[in-house]
Amino acid sequence: MLLVIIAAALIIGITVCYLRSITIALMIVIGAALSLGVSYFVYRVIYNIPIFPFMNLMTAFILIGIGCDDIFVFFDTWDQEKIEWLRKYQDKQPSDNEDILLNHTNTHDGVPSNQKVKPSKLKRPSNAFQSRHRLCLFKNPEEIRKLLLHEEALIEIMSNTLKHAGSSMFVTSFTTAAAFFTNMLTNISFVQVFGVFTGTCILLYFVITVTAIAAFAVIYEKYIQDIMTRVFSICCADAVKKSSNSAASKLCRRCSLTCKDFRNYLFGHLIPSLIINLRYVFVLLFFLLGLVAVFYYPKLQVPSTQKVAFFLKDNPMEIYEFSMKTQFNGYSKEDKRLFAYPAVSFIFGIRDIDDGYIFDMNDRGHLYLMPIHLNQHNTLEFFKNFITHLGTRKDIFTSNYYLEKDFESFYQ
Image (cartoon, rainbow, N blue to C red; front, side):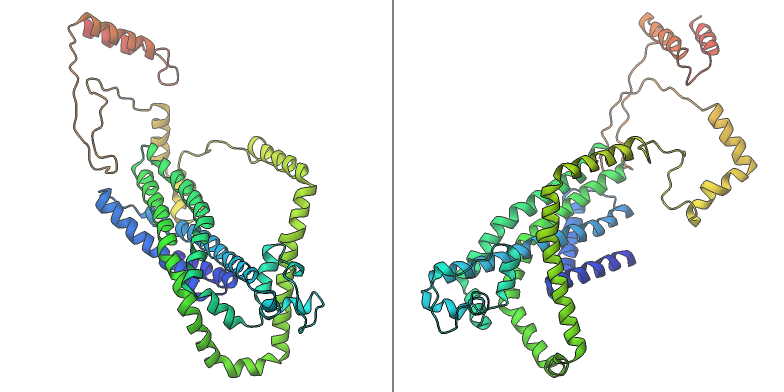
C-alpha cells in the first residue's frame, strides 16, 4: 500500500508540474480508483472469479502510469483545440479587431497599436509551441475566456478533442489490454486472473477517461478554474505583490523561462535535426546493440538455478533458499537422491478432460475414466511397445531391464 501511495504522489507531482493543475492530477488518482472498483465488481460478479490473488494489486501501479499517459494526451489535445478554435474565431472577425485580440502584432511585427493590420499579414503560429505561447499574449484574457465558455465553443472543442485524442487513447488502451488478456493462454491460474483483471481495468479506465474525465474537463473549464483563480488571488495577493519585485521571484521567473526555452529547443529543434540527419546511424547503432545484448552479453538464457527468486539473493526471504539450505546435511542427501533417482509415475485409464472452472484452482472438475481391458491382445501390445520405448529414453532410465522383467511376469 505504501508503494502505491508513493507512486500516486510521484504521478501527482509530475502532473502538477506539466499541466499546472492540482485538480487534474487528483483526477488521475480518482479515475484509477474508480476503475479498480468497477473492475473488481466485473471481476467478481460478471466474470464470477472466486479467487483474488495478491498479485492483482500490482494493477494499481500499471493503471496509474497508463492513466497518466491518457490524461496527458487528452488535456494536450484539449489545449490545442482551444487554440485552434480561437484562431478560427479570430479569422471570422473583421480586420478592425485583429489588433484588439492579439498583442503579438504590436510587439513582433513592428506595427503600431493604432494601425489596422490586414488579416493576411498576421503571422500564424508555425508549431504547437508558438501557439501555446501566443495564448499568453492576449490583451483581454477575460474576453477570451468568456468566448471559450460558450456552449457552442465547448461542444466544438470537446468533439474535436475526442475525435483526435479518443482514437489514440483507444488504440493504446486496447493493445495494452490485449497484451494482458493473452495471459489466459497459460495454465497458471494466478497469471490468468491477473491478466483478466488488469486488462479489464485498462479498458474501463479508457471508458472513464472519455466520459467522466472529459465531463470533468468541461466543469473545470467553466467553474473550478475560475474559483481556484479567485481563491488564489484573495489568499496570496499580498504575498505576490511583496515577492513580485524580490530577487528570488525574478530568479524563479528567469529559471522558468530558461527551462521552457531549453525544452522548446531540445524537442523542437535539436532532437528532430539529429533524427533527420543521423537516421541511418541511429537505426544501425541500436540494431547492433540489440544483437549484442541478445546473443553476446548479457544474452538471453534460461535461469541457472532451480528455484525462482522473487527478491534479491541477500533478502531475508531468499537467504535460506540460496545460501543456507545447502549447509544442512539432510537436505543435501535428499536433494541428491531426488536428482539422481527421480520418482516417475505413469497413470493409465484416465481421460484427458478438464471441466473445472478455468479461473478456480480449487475446482477439480470431474474424473472421467477410460476402461482398459488387460486381457486383450491390443492392450498387451501397447504396454510392450510402451516399455520398449522407455528403454530408449536415457534421460529418464538408464535401462528398462526390470520393467521388461515385470511385464513378462505380468503377461505370463
